[in-house]
Length: 448
Image (cartoon, rainbow, N blue to C red):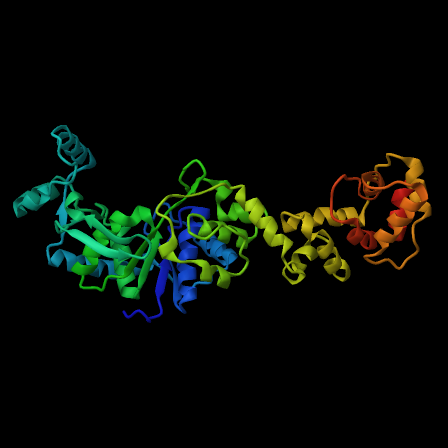
């Protein structure tokens, strides 16, 4: 692979739950990395956990990525590739790097406790390598089936990390990892390596919780005679108090955030820019966000965020959102198409979420329960109501006439009119709302 080779990256979630904002971070970092370099993005479902993986969660992964604006160039399921994994396992067995072990979990736990009691590191002692064929036959006769461990070379694995710079793992301090369970199913490690190699993944960008895995996986790549991809390990997104994110946090699931009315641009901005050298700000465009992402400028410290930051980011995006992006959503909220653009421009500065526009359309269309704190003042204002047609200057002309007639100004002038027309103390600029409400409805509210 040369430096000018377009990258092929992957996001490989397990379809065992709904994706959360922490999962959005590696998905977006991979997609934006490829986007900025003319590369491709692979969605590969790590669905080898047969009991917990479901079609519902697999479909939800695709829906969540689409909502974020990520359209995979390639798609694969690890469960469709078991024959390829089997061939790689056979290759490792043939060269003596994958060996059978028969200990139960209870036996292994007893050994770990003994090692700790003697001040020794609690790593696997490779006792299975001393078993003879007769020993294995006897264990099989007892009904034991083996799990299979990868024999690590006792050396330090080094690589140039896209995020962390020079990185290394001392594999001599690790237990030989189990790659195949006693029931014959694969753990994460081997299928991940085999699929990355066979599918030509050039860059593996993932969370820093995989650093130790990388030391192991580099040795597996090499044992299989496959080129080693470039690795990058970014910091993990956590809550402000340092709590890690999990699929159990439903309020931070991408589905939950979508249903709560947040814009994908706000979620993307928070998920990607938090914990980087770039200030967290609302970025609507994927291309602009891709231009801001520099993996080398991601902090080594945890990427802490306050979920309430989403509110501010979302509001800033909504305030700048053109009508063309929301026309369908306004129609779904009952706003007539012929009045929708003027209505959007009038209420947009007061919205934190697009869904709130429907509340203001109900104020425009009525019915509204007017609040009349001063009947005499409101009657005087009604008498001065201009004739139609109305435009954006009508509010200024009308309130100017009311001020001249009654001598009222400032809050004493504007608040009673707002209460009478909307029933509320705060809201969008009435210069924009007045023409939308119309003279007949305004007069009816003033004389209620």
